[in-house]
Image 1: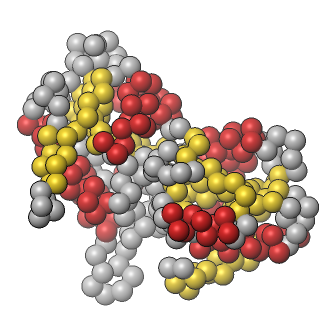
Image 2: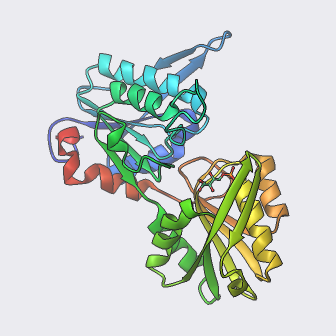
Length: 310
Ligand code: R5P
């Protein structure tokens, strides 16, 4: 197969077994070879990583979303090293979910600045990173922390389109549960002209949040659709859903980019009254309903990536 731009270098997509499905979708969208990365765990917990022997001197894309990061990051670095050793001309990391982006400063003396550590590790191992809706607080541009090119995509327009399709004919109001979600909920609303409400959140602990939503009375008798980038413990969504239902919303749904919640925490969301949860396939989850392959492929095929695929 020729390279993506017609160059003689083949392009290959490499993925670990538990991310095979979305990685294959990306390979299909790109018309690229798909290669599994073999992973063996030794009894002591160490990993043996082996890339496909068919990998040549072309561009390599490693697809690895970084939920469950503490084990995945080491496997990813080993895979990158093996690709370099096999002569891959350039290596792109496609990490739809990028881990450890929240800890961008030391809040208490002695804390590690995790964002900086991960950015340095990945910058040393790859030539480019492509990610979706990185969860950033004080750093808004990842090129300030990575020393390699970073493409930051957003799934918000896809969420907006999915909401419009799913809720056709309903009286819908979009709700961002906190100020950080404002940019996603507004981007999701931009194609649909739906009304938007944004809450204010005070976090008292990992699972303890308080949320106030200005204009809450506007949800009475309507379908409230919560939009957020990340759902982790689910506390934010649970609290917001209770506020919306107490205010008379006839139904509360959730559309999110990265669904990181455990099975128990996801059940708690439904128990709190959320009727429908739809997430992108950035993280493998029972609620996945939106594929990112076309968004990722378009970014990889864009002219700025000529140096990677040329
Ligand atoms: C906040 O900054 C984010 O937008 C999410 O609302 C938050 O990370 C969700 O966390 P949890 O599900 O644990 O409340």
